[in-house]
Length: 239
Length: 239
DNA sequence: GAATGTTGTCTATTTTATTAGACAACTGGC
DNA sequence: GCCAGTTGTCTAATAAAATAGACAACATTC
Image (cartoon, rainbow over all chains, first blue to last red; front, side, top):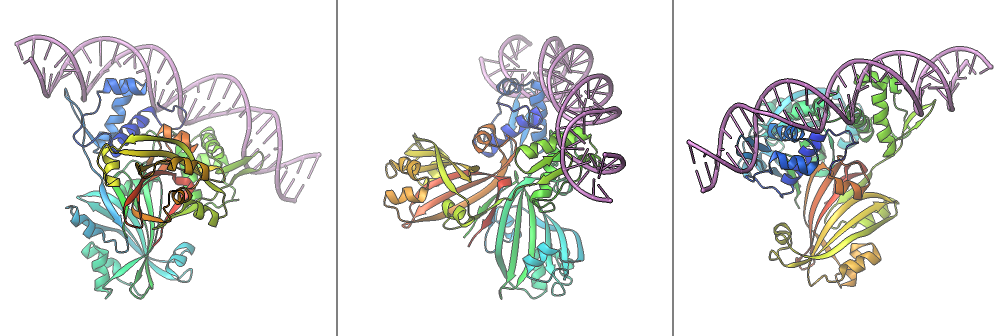
């Protein structure tokens, strides 16, 4: 039931198993978990080990323990559509959550090879590079690095910082609409820097979404690599 | 550089960091890794700990160590498009890999709530449930559970087992074409059962893709939950 | 073929994770 | 109020991970 030569602490495997029960729907919000003693028996570990795992889930807000009564499931992840026109603020408004993009940093740098290819510009051309965090009701959902070609988007970072929305910042520069050109998805564990920004333990799973946006003339205007906390969102493909 | 209260063994964190360098392209196939002693210093761990991490990467085929010379990067992930008409065999043929779906199990069961909703049928209606593994050149890429409504798809499993392709199995039943209705994506760590099927260590990251297919009349014919080994594929969204 | 730098292997020690047991604190049902 | 069942906390013992050091084996360069 539990793999012991794998680099994952026993308590972590217990936590992951319980989390899988939750995310898969075998345990629903409000359900009571099996008692710690039973979980310990099921996984073949000590009750203390189970407790440590549950403590981690509690810290992440997935469960809540009540002395004398039991441990109960909290949570439900945000469904996040990825489509031709993905607008973070609109998505969140639809699910009834308060959303705002936060500008972590903005700088002018030369484009490296990857960004140059993504934006269809010369390697070394000047770009505006922003790091941003998007939250739903204060909880970080994604941490992103977004790049724009210069000089066209000079000052975009200040508009974004003021408005908290990329769509609004674009409007300030006279871009009324834009759409998605390409989207790529993979997943891995968060590195320490990402983990710090997303307020998660390093080693938690993040979905990596690399996307390119174009304006209505088809000119590439934006290349983004977003890292979504995998257990806080479920992506859905729109068409 | 290394988080020590997280349930991830130090050697595992080293392995993950090196793996991230590889998957992100900072280290390319053929490159030599920094010597074990340097890695130990960089991560602030003992050389033995580094060695254990590298041993795991070697076992998974990501690196290869040569005594006296160094440790070198192997691998390159498969790019897997998700679109209106995703056909596994065609994708693999295009990248020049030999591909075949393998039927692990097939059974007739009553639809649970989730499957019933996905297929637009009554809960408890009979369905055909198949578990399949898809490989590229023998290496497992995905492990999937696929459900079809009965009696329409009676015997589909035998056609699939014979042909190794869902598209061909459909043709045997007179379905010439089909398309994707919806796609949902998230990620988590593999549980032991999945890990065994995919030939990976439990705790490795899998991409979970839940999709529904419809025939040309728009009738739902198939609900699938696939688990892709995250470090063996990169998904790309087609439109 | 000698020097240097690398991976491979062994032993011993220290630190951390896990187990074991006991009991307190609290809840819900009777 | 009492009882059975649950989570919370503490102490101690044991198992496993990680460190430390030394040296063998091999590759590459000069």
